Image 1 (cartoon, helix red, strand yellow):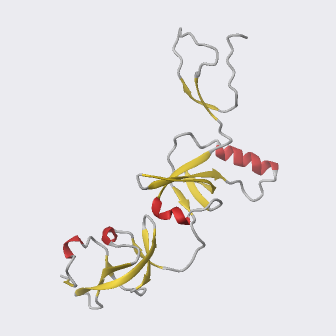
Image 2 (cartoon, one colour):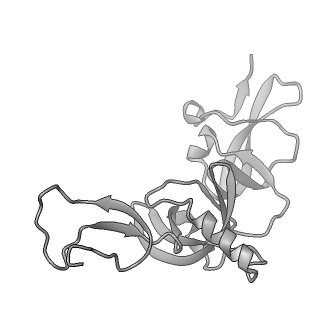
Image 3 (cartoon, rainbow, N blue to C red):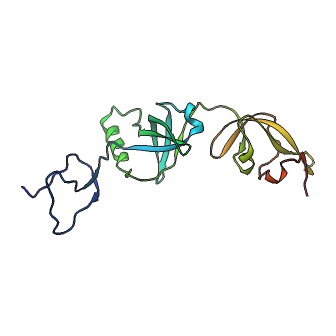
Amino acid sequence: DALVVRAPVAGRVTGLRLQVGESVRVSQNLGRIDETRQCKVVAQVDEFYLNRIAVGQRAEMQIQGTHYDLSLSHILPQIKDGRFSIELQLTPSASSDDAKSKEKFDAQAMHMRAGQSVEVHVTLAAASQALLLPNAAFASSAGTEKSSVFVVTPDGRHAQRRAVTLGRRNRSQIEVLAGLVAGETVIISSYAAWAKVEQLQLQ
């Protein structure tokens, strides 16, 4: 029995640093065990969203085609390299009071591994109607307030610079608050070479 080493918790062994013939001491750290029934996700978020993140917000992710619901459990507001950290936990289904649902939720948690990278979508607000532009190269010089875009004329021969008001943005889209109407065509490539140009002639 003196040669049997027992872990303090049940879980998955993810690291074992032993060599054949090695001598070990009492209380020596022999490896790492991940507690698979207490999984959480740690995400890095741009500081732009710090005032819009709150504990309890919902999120979702997919792992190998399986959908998982998450809830934001903790916010670490310290800014480092323009980002802060949040922690999210797996959320059981609404019927989790049922024993079978709890077993299913635990089984889902078992699919997560320490250090695994996943893409998480956090819901910052309720769904609403909005006019959107792609978050493309033109946006590098566009602020969150007054900016301008090149709008293509109906005949397709010219593009005129127009002032617009931009709002919220994420990695793929930018909200347009004023200055455009649905259906208008906007040039979304870089405007770096057209800083002082008001009108473009299109070939």
